[in-house]
Image (tube, rainbow, N blue to C red; front, side, top):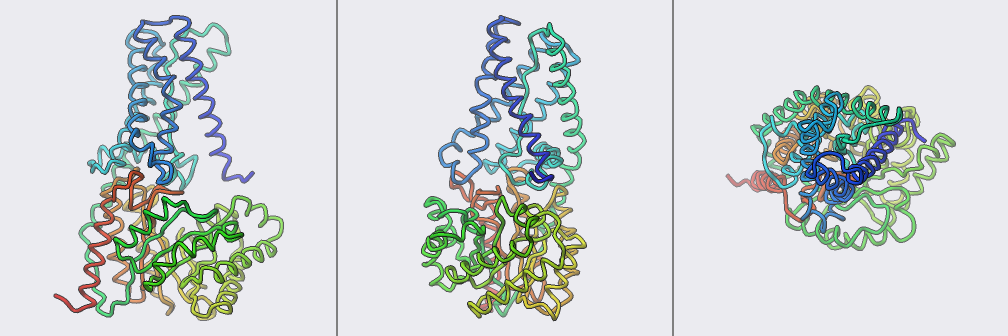
Length: 509
């Protein structure tokens, strides 16, 4: 088991234990007839709704599963609100000691506030930063457990806890209650500490809306979108239908897909090629980025060169079957690559990218090969400098520009670093991914961040294109389309940028 996954595994175990405790405690409270009739009814209702509500919260965020459950997404914030009411009632009528009831109430308030804000964001409501930060604070708190995934994963949720209303007669029962109080206190304090940071994270997106796109009269700047879930199996028909329709609506000139090594085997790539056949006829550029499989770290530790050979075989299949215009042999080495493979020497990456470029050029000379910087660390800087240098066999260098927990301030800092790195080298540049989770930061922040990166990218003379990540909420919740099919405000931003660039290229006033 990889060390970086241990916190998430421990958190998952705690969540399962909390779910079991909630259900069992609700059942015992009803059987033992503790508290008022209303308290017993409320406690039983919370225990009954929690598991179904959590299931709805996770599935309704997905563009694949959420087509049926998004209409009842309100069940999760309603359930969280019922837990708050149960805690208030338990404290007010004396069913729970204040030393336990107050910490649990404070924690449930944080969960309920975050659930309501995320529901409003998911519905496309624009909230002021002081309210929207209630959702950001939960994500930043869970970041200590999930890392970057807390900003994009539907699984990064806090689970409310019933306030204990049954007196503990055994030492073990008192220990459990004390443990619940301690965990609730720590979580509530962490949430409160992260709230001011959440307000600033949202407020710092505002300056991006005032940026202006640099006109590109030569028409040498392309706009695109990532489509489909990461390819592990044949793409779902629902995703194909909606994503290809969105590409047609946007008139995107670039389409990107993420593929895993396991997804290159069998007939999976053939199904992807057939699905994208129509848009390829319209001279749409295809960008393919090769990701990682769950067992890659073990393979890498056992035999680094053997693992590189396996990836090269996957690249061989990708180039032969998909015929990409631009190939990224390994997605975000300093970010996604490090999470998947662990710490890998810079020399291994340079050898691998060189071999991948030579192979792709041999199989299909028209395919260009690129590399994306994403973490903006010294390691990323060295890898980007190599990719941009005269000895590199790569054709393109580029960036993944996603905000971290600092929101707009973190995105602005990454743009400054990317601008400095862009001054060296002569190769064409791309922004291979820009996006953020509108359920955490809100649809306004998603629109402003995309516009700000667009303005920066068009001001870079060697920048040749930008790809928005992605069409729908699949493996990560960053889509231009909500699970119910509603198009988010970012679509209007994309069309606005396309119109400005097209008018400049055609010489229209």
